[in-house]
Length: 277
Image 1 (cartoon, rainbow, N blue to C red):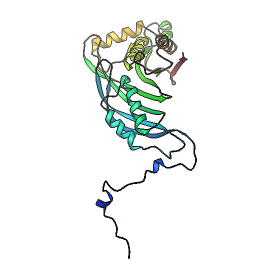
Image 2: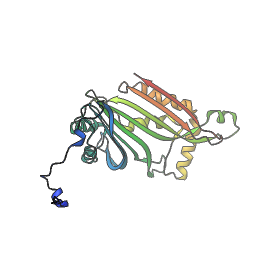
Image 3: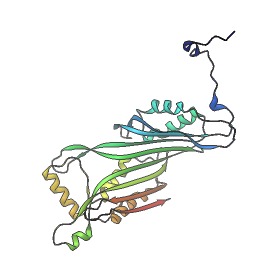
Image 4: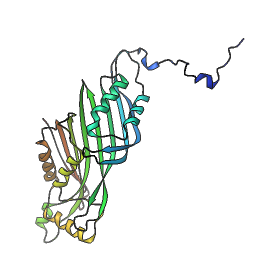
């Protein structure tokens, strides 16, 4: 006589025990450095230490180390952790998030990464009109050997005006939009936290003029003359940003890369500086 087939309802009874396949002993007993999920788009609220919060959508990645006696990680726990924390993502909460993730996965090393546009309101210099400017940002945390580290990356749009063009021309000078990409790494301790605003401010100071979403004619005149009075090669901008940040001893390692989208050349120009303490 054939065995009765369990109904779907019977299969889903809480008393029905399912095997934990991930906890099985692997055929090849090697440590896996990273195993997890990538490219999960999820709404998050990015918080600043000041209490200001920004809602955005992040491309998220999570990973954990897998010991020699475990076959795999429980992938669902990454998503559970993300959902529990998605309204309070911040530099100052990242250490606690990593500790929570480590506990849920029973892993010695874990990684959490969020890539997202950060929209900050910028006020026009003369008219006072406001509009949002988008900054591409990345927040990555790693817990290794009980030490939590953070890497912040942001890309800041700027205007640059060519010093050579201004000097050799009877009138005018060519200018272009550029981008400053800054990446800094530091340890997550109470006294060593940086924010995206720190990096954006350093970039704004180094360019010939900032970028705005909303400019009236009075603002456009102001920004045009500001750029003309502050000419800078791509090398000048890179040096200025690096000098502003490398003296900050909280930063363990940093990199600055500036790209100018040249307006009169068929190529772009770039320069980069990296350092480590």
